[in-house]
Amino acid sequence: MHATIRGALRVLGVLAALAALATGCSKGSNTDSAGKSSARPTSPSSSHRGLGDIFVGGKAVTGSKPTGNTKVPYQRTYSDGTLYVSVTGYRSMMYGNTGLEALYDDVLAAGASGAASGDVVTTIDPAAQKAAFDALGDRQGAAVALDAESGKLLAVVSTPSYDPAAFSGRGPEDAKAWKAANTDARSPMVNRALRRAGAPGATFSVVVAAAALEQGLYTTVDGATSSPLAYVLPATQTRVTGASPQCENASIRLALRYSCDNVFTKMAAELGPAQLSSMAVKFGFNDGTLRVPLQVSESSYPGAGRSPSQAALTGIGVGDVRATPLEMARVAAAIANGGRLVTPQLVERVTKADGSTQQPKPSGGGAEQVISRRTADVLQSALKTAASDVVSQGSGETESKISGKTGWVTGTQGDSATSWFTGYADRTDGRRIAVAVCVEGLPSPAGGARGSEQAVQVAEEILASVS
Image (cartoon, rainbow, N blue to C red; front, side):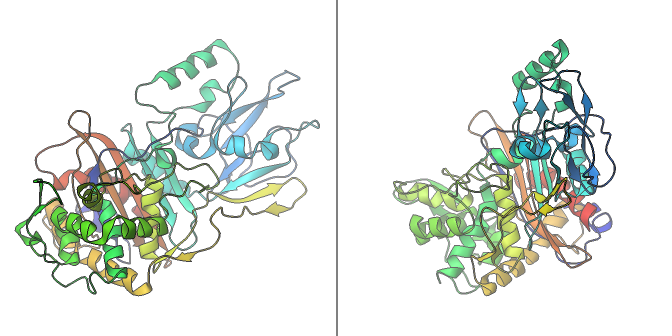
């Protein structure tokens, strides 16, 4: 997207990506923690008094201090609380717990002896987390990065953030900070990465393309799709026009390259809602049971009752399609992982005071082959080809390891939009890292295609940090 992808990224493999603008990153509510001060060593210890701790990259990002209160003897403290709040959750003497603080309360709380029964070790990569957090800044948005093969979550970021240490106690200043965080119009306590699902826009077209290939509607990504440049939605007079003359009868490869809405709406109409729903479910949509182990809002593909025109519009990720950034990162990971979808996981292990360890069982079980290896391979090839136009818009260069697809879906209120990016890259150790980024509340200029740059810039920073 920019020349920075060439120098800063330094990724050995091919970055395959989808980028789009949509009405929102996600939907729902539930945040986690952040704050100040930690008094723990750089690795889990089983012999400390006070609250148990949450670890990131071998270092405790939480701590505790005595309160002198027999009922609540310890108050939680945080290191880099605003950075990790979407991971840890908050622990407050007045307002309870959320996130990992709540989920592992039986491990982290100090027992009758004054000592906790253990610590929680996360999968988060501190460099990836910080890169995402800094790149998003104070904008409303979210970013997720995960290992495509293992499902380990390397970054879970939601912005704007808040400091959980500000209300971990029970004084008047804590009450003031709590009220400020909860009444902020930007909703900092909502975990946008996991708990807000919005229209994913053109990033969803990779799911449509996968369905078309799996169902035999098309046997190759290079065959013409017989798509008029201005496609009329079924039973309407509404036209969906491709963004480029190249979109007329474009192949899947070209449709991904030029963000051809006409191709994917027609493709969705030809597939029908049943086949599209089946493919979306395979990728993880309509699953209300997913836990990472934090609760995740359900990403959804609309069920029966859609009109033919509404069903066609789902081909470009609107018409009641909803996805969290986590879900779109899973889609990218499945393509990167040869068609195998894994359950994302935030907790590496629980280290108990007696020296034993426990590894949480993923809620979705092991990896599942959701599309064939052949379909995954040809989609990788098609997305790789998409690179030249995307890069030339940003830097004037045609050689790059980035591939992408852009598109705009304006908001239903006002003239705002959301910038989406989802894709993957190879690390120097051969592991593939999938990412999804969304940036909300952007103006919706007439230029359209380049609006995804904001999300792409964040993704560049994340991938550079883990290369």
